[in-house]
Length: 86
Image (cartoon, rainbow, N blue to C red; front, side, top):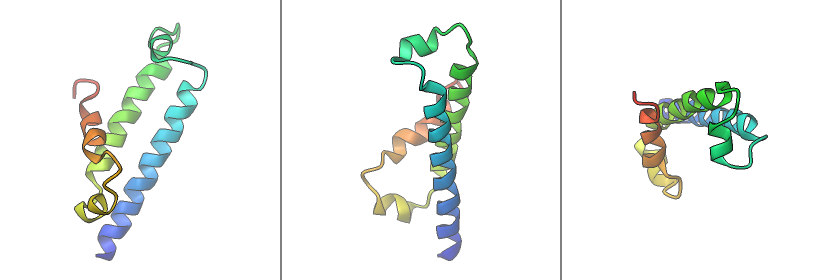
């Protein structure tokens, strides 16, 4: 059980770090269309990679933890793996 708790904690920290980086990338844009159409495509492309990371990390969360926190959209986050066609 301790191994799962450690694995859950590592995955949750990685998810939070990815969302923090996403927040930084999008802070200068007030809507998604402007973000997508920005002159510099790097922030948008990086955001896709971060969403994939969130999806991969959410798959690492134990079922026990997912059942404990049902208000978190785990299945939706898991789908981020496919966000850029992977």
